[in-house]
Length: 207
Image 1 (cartoon, rainbow, N blue to C red):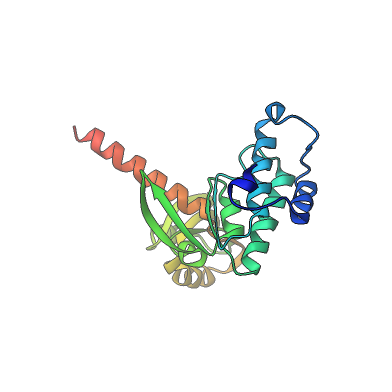
Image 2: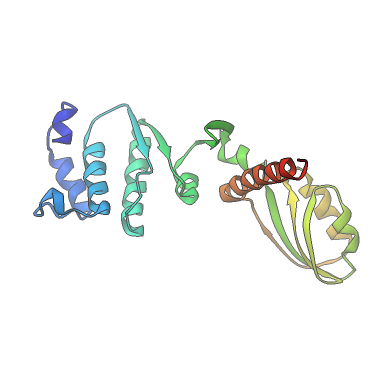
């Protein structure tokens, strides 16, 4: 029915998608769970031949294996030059599939760009052990949330644009161990969320 509404027909591709999404078509539609209803919509969407696809929270109700099937189907669309607009709260899903990302807060787009551009706006997490005390690093520009485990061991975050100067300073202190965790889209999203809460808190305190 969904295919006919769009002027399409059930095809061999539809059968292949039913198999990939493990959709039991022997059951009555009214007995389907939320996950199975989601599968019906996805099978219909991927069966359709279009230039532009829109998915709004498409993996809601799906288990991890079916989420992977969905991601593979989207990547296949991209490979053949199709355009896809995806709205999702699953940030790992967005990171894997999207070329450009927009963050929406309170109904407005507050940031847009490629994943690499987005990551430049976030912070890397540094875990380091040095031969000399690290106290001076805590006061460097771009360093945040400095957690000194011992005089020569600490965990902190650093703005992307200041990573070079911080690494130079650490090198002068004699690096014994170093782990750098690059920023993720989730880090960026939470950074905006926390800024929003901070602004709300400031407004409350000023009253």
